[in-house]
Structures are given as C-alpha cells and as structure tokens.
Image 1 (cartoon, rainbow, N blue to C red):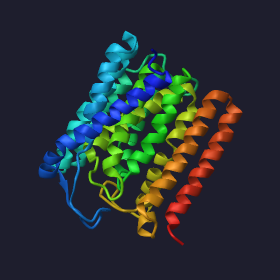
Image 2 (cartoon, rainbow, N blue to C red):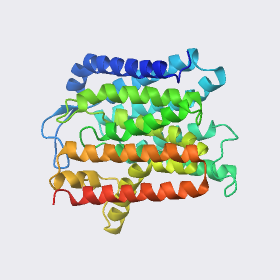
Image 3 (cartoon, rainbow, N blue to C red):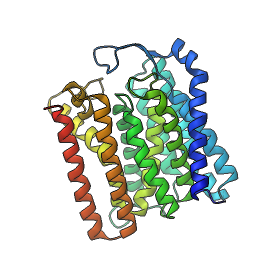
Amino acid sequence: MSLMQPLSALGLVAASAVLTACLIIVIKPLLVRFLLARPNARSSHKVATPQGAGIAVMLVLLAVCGVGATLLLPAQQGQSLWPVLAGAAALTVLGTLDDAHALAVTWRLIGQTLAALAIAATLPPDLRLLPDILPLLAERALLVLGTVACINAVNFLDGIDWMTVVEIVPITLAVALLAALHAVPPGVGLLALALLGTMLGFAAFNKHPAQMFLGDAGSLPIGLCLAFLLIFVARADLAAGLLLALYIAADTGVTLCRRLINKEPVFSAHRSHFYQRAVSHGLSVPQVTGRVFLLGVVLGGLAIGAVLAHSGVVDLLLLAIGAAATGLALRSLGRGRQ
C-alpha cells in the first residue's frame, strides 16, 4: 500500500501521535526534575511547568521517519531525508541544553546555521526556486538564511499554550495533501505526516492550561523541519510556499521591525508579538490560538489552490487574498478585546 493512500497516511499519523503521547508520559518525571520552567515577568504561564516535551516529539519523529525512509520509500527518496533528520537531532540536543541552562545566542546561531547549511548543501542540484533571477550559490545562501530565520521564528512564536500546534498542524496537513497530489516528493510527505502526528500527540499535554511545554528541544528542530518542507512546496509553486509561511513570517517580521525601530534588543525575551499582545489585551489563550488556526487553514487551502492552478495570475490573486487575511488576523490580535 502506498504511503500517501488515506488509510496508510492516517495510520502513520495515528501511530506517531500515540507514540508521542506515551513517550511524554514516560519522560515527564525527568522533565519535572531537570527541565522545569518557572514563571517570570515575561512568561505566559503562572505555575512551574515542565518543558522539554519536544524531546519526545523529536524522538518519535526521527524514529518514524527513519523507519519509513528505510522501509516505505525508494532508496533515493529515503536518503534525501537523512540530512534534515540529522540536523533535527542535533538541534534537539542543542535545544535541550538551552532548556537546561540558557546558552549564548552565538552558540544557538552557530548550531542553527550548521543545520541549515547541511540541508542546503544536500538539496538536489536541480532544485531551483528562482533560476532566472539568482545563480545557484546565491539561491542556496538565501535558503540558509531563510532556514535560520524559520527556526528562530517558530521558536519566537512558541510562547503560549497550543501556539506551535495551531501553526504546524495546518501547514503539515497541507503539505501531506500536496504529497498525495504528487506535487512534492513522497519523502517530504512522510516528514509532514510524522510531524503532524507528533504535534497532535503533544497537543493533549499542551492544551490550555498546559501540563507540558515543547521547550527549545522541540521548537528549534520543528523550525528546521518546517523550513525543509516549505522549500519543496516552493519548488512546486513559489506562491504556495509563501502562503504557508505567511503568518509565521508576518508576526515575526513585523514585530522584529517594530523592535528595531524602537531600538529594543532583538534577541532578548519579550511579549510584543501579536499573539502575546492579544492575550495582554484581554483575549483568552484559546481565542488567540483559534484565530491563528483558522488563518492557517485558510492559508493552507490557498496554497493548495495555487499549486493546482499553476498560474502566475492566480498566484498573485491568492497571495493578495492570503496577505489580506493575514493582515486582518494580525490587526485583530493586535487590538485584542475591544
């Protein structure tokens, strides 16, 4: 049975979710002992909560993708996943160390850049996003920068319960559907399904009020995996890749620009992202995550439409619709309850 047939895909997602939930239960005592996140002035939680559930998420994802790449995919497709899996494993270790004892920003960026370089250097030579505009080396350099930016954006936006879940679930579902439509390679579909399942398994423990947090052990490698998925979606249709990343890029980018203009430290912890301001201005956490999830579903649908249409005019129209929807969502979050 093909990996992307409905029953096989559903089974893989379900198995990933169950294994993640079971592993979180097993390692929870260790997280409580060694990786307890205590609330401070910048925290969204009010009681000490174990972080590091991302360790379970990534262990299951690595196992599922490793087995799937070996047994379910053609050799070439399976081999294409090993660089991103190796990079994700390395960032899981880096994130765990950071959760246990905050690392210097320099070390974090070095680790992220090395993981991004490993992915860019092992992409298929014929994978081009802007062949008529940029030479190969320049394009690969931009992909490295974009991957590091994606890793940090996912990390920055992992600030309230279920936030990463509602960002990642619509994106991975859209990528899995694109794999079923043969718009992206089966290996990309396998990674999307595994990430979808592990996030659903984690969601049960991160529902507001959260029992567990991902921690950097989860948000950093998830950002890397997301960047890898988006690269292949963008190869199928550049507008589709942009649409799937639109909320993450917009919230992070606008917030970063605002902090630069106000001469605020960019890498210090803060509560000025749109979703954080929404909570500060009176919206409940479920209200915020519900709006972000709805936007993600809309953007996922637009991305699939862009791939199916395969038309420059349609791409521009769908990008305009996606930008308008994202702008309205950010405006709503920024205003909070009024």
